[in-house]
Image 1: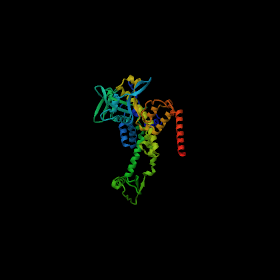
Image 2: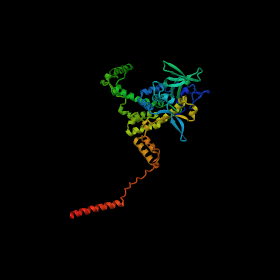
Image 3: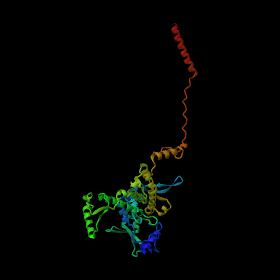
Length: 458
């Protein structure tokens, strides 16, 4: 009766797992930053439906899950996180980058084996495969200064509770062979409750299992020589020992051995082979696989085309691929990096700056996205836009030159309508011939003419 009642409750959306019935919030439960209750009595030791270890295993076993997570993780190579402070320039408050800031030095090289991209890659992967969502970072101090960060596998980390079991005093890392305990101050932990920020992979596990099952079916189909399963139908009754003997003899002769995959079966007059399996052409496999692939990509926010999933390649073009990457950054990665920027600011920048300065926004973190190819304009379109803005007086000459990648020029901080007109060139005045010079030339020529005439006449 209890199972039937649970079934009715599930249909009505009222079903509660048995292990969660009767749970109450502890009176002394503290609110973590972010406003969610960190401790619910009876829930700390309750096994979750899909563990982080299971999710990590799914990432390694399913190609599409691996590709989706890897595509998100690989974006960590381009954005650059830096510190900027508020300054006053020309009566206006602006932000300028801070050179050689200790936050930047640590984030650029968090430990001897990792770079900034490695740290962010660990953060992105951990956030997608842990259940509930977690990112654990061990902090290492040298003479009181934070000098190294080491991200930890979320599958190996669990809360460390006090002797009474009702207060959280730290964290435990254990891989089954080794164990290390951390105080709360020795770890940075980004966490999110599943009720408003659930991890994507558990939601996709149904489609992941369906996709994996199709892959396994195709593999088994070809391992069996392309022959679907079937049964042997005899025209006479058989005892149970006879059935077992026939089954074993058939397996021994035509079982899944490499040398017997394409062997020839021989049946006598008393038996017929009846196919009960489905051949690949009857499965509508492309449709089924497309549904599973699209749902897996959907929960990760990854367009199928950029991971070259089958459903994405059905209508693939070069322009579609470019638009897919642009949409991926706009809808998925840009919001994700904004969330990480805020988290790093409150949990890591606060190690080097006063919290009151962060709250007053006198200092903050910012991302340099200039190297993210998907966010950059087409060069021709960018130059055309800059040219039009300059022609209508919207930007100065040097701003125009900066947008097209050229250096500034002296006196170039003016708009096109502010450039003074060049003075008109005046024609050079020709020296005037004086009257005396004209008379002298006239007399000279007349004399020469008279002399020539006399010489001819004489």
